[in-house]
Image (cartoon, rainbow, N blue to C red; front, side, top):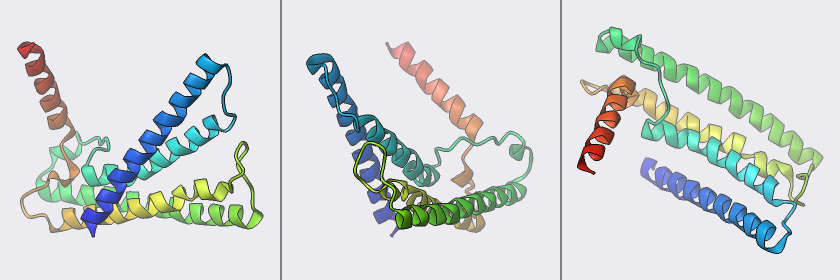
Length: 180
């Protein structure tokens, strides 16, 4: 099931990026070539970007690409690091849960009232439903991370190593520069 959700996330993120590029590019062409443009394009691009960011939260948890500050945590042995990791994931689940609940209430009210977007004749709740969808996916991914930290034997890579990753990236860039 996790692989299926990952494929959906990756495909949807790609689709959102492509849609943003197409809408933005079409507006650049419309403005500079035809001296016109669509009023709704900026609003659509803004909503697409919001979807990209919020949808990307769960994908970031899955792929371990969120920034973490681990200098303090690395001072401790692995069992204590696991406890810090579990606390961090728990706090993140609570936050995502609050956002999910608040998004659910907000989107529900928008649906009942029937407010449309400013420049498009589309119900606003459809665009803002990403609050519920994205936070639900984030909770799913965070619970996976919690389980991975909890059940890890010797491998503690679930939380990543920010300093090690930065050094490796710097070294890779240095090697690429030398090869040129």
